[in-house]
Length: 275
Image 1: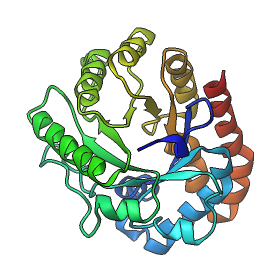
Image 2: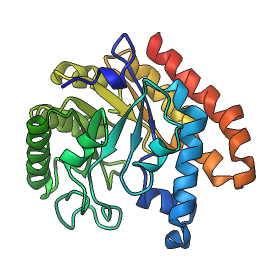
Image 3: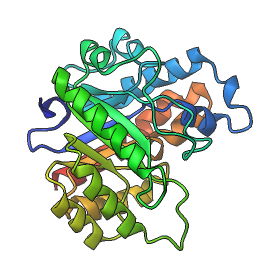
């Protein structure tokens, strides 16, 4: 198993995240998420990948709207691998309702068969909440399944319900510790909160970790990733913070915004990776 298809020659990850489903509906149509059609979501994803993916080392996709649609459209550049999301949806509404499940009708073996360079599993997670042990067991089972079919796996513990009174650095460092013990090939983590916490994460984990954008502003993500990159982080996996304005704009403006705003942003992140 190797993540080489998702990294540059220096082993750094510059990943375009476009595997959003429920969160994309909520982002674009908060008052009526279900009004966003399958065709609209698929067209959006194809256009974003076509506009940016030549700058990326990898792209995050999912089997509902972008696998195989993005691939069949021919917009994924040669040499750019993709990660296939495994998780079912529904976690946005109650992240503590039940452990994460795989998407119905989809499997690790199918992810490998479709040509994915890696699987990806998102799990709503907090180490200080009752569901933590169950979510860790889900992660172990999926990692074991990926090992069985010789497919790399990126784990994404997704934090929820954080407020100013929470000790964010401690929560993220502890999460990194627990998930590193499960032995994924890549960890996708939020900004740990401080440079010291980034260094602690890099010290704890014996696999690469990449930083997610988490839907915040692009400028904040740049500042955070600059710190994380200098403290041992191996790259970024960026979604709405990168392309949010472009996909929210009228579809007639999308191509121009991808060229004028989104591409320069991605180039800026790649330069930080290379520094």
